[in-house]
Image 1 (cartoon, rainbow, N blue to C red):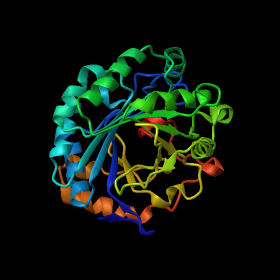
Image 2 (tube, rainbow, N blue to C red; image 1 turned 120 degrees about the horizontal axis):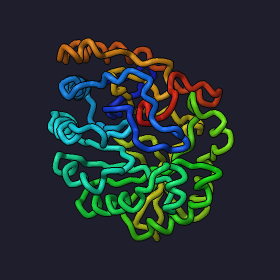
Image 3 (cartoon, helix red, strand yellow; image 1 turned 90 degrees about the vertical axis):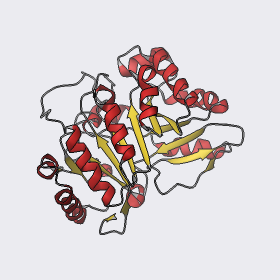
Image 4 (spheres, one colour; image 1 turned 180 degrees about the horizontal axis):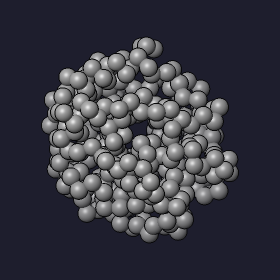
Length: 323
């Protein structure tokens, strides 16, 4: 079991397989993907060695992220390999949904158990304004298809933006009333590239939390493999609401997640100053060496991020590690 010096246990890996993204979300990559960094992404075999090492150390849940993981041509193989690795109980995917409608059945057949889709607005025009793309209708069909195919958990992610989608909370609540889908509102996080946008658009998740609790929404107890969202249900709604509030008190106290970048660096926090290079063991297919490197690295994990002090570490934008 991977454990840090604060007694936190880590059973959930967020695995980036590429930092390339084909969307231009205004809070992340407003000018599109800029290929100015190392693109020597981990090969399938390196990812397999990494997953095997994490599984031996008690990792039970893997979420495949990007950038946009749907751009990897071997994504189906990666999903299948993760699901077939002994010890891995859940395999999730976070995607912008650009090819969801076309590929969700393949992903499901490969073993995908959990699906998160970024959907920052239910208004096609606002969706285009935020993402720079007109894929709304296809993404919605893909979400419906995922539910129909029996994906265990389907969640939508919406980043809260004061001047764009802040007033659409009611629309989301009405939309999930008859759908077994969770909508998760994510506080906009400051990164190296978005300071001015952050100042103009940050919305406290606690505002949404107060609204929900005042209108009969009830908190749900978190599962051991759950992510950071605080989830709510309502007796009159089939769907649920999740709130991810990194600026809230004690947000990091229950951290159970580690991150590995597409270039094979372990990030002990989304906002760590730098990643820990695992590439040598991975390139040699050396599971034991990788296990040792992971175990040793855990001694360096700190108690909390320092976002409140506007310290964003090496995270230039969220596509670097998939959030």
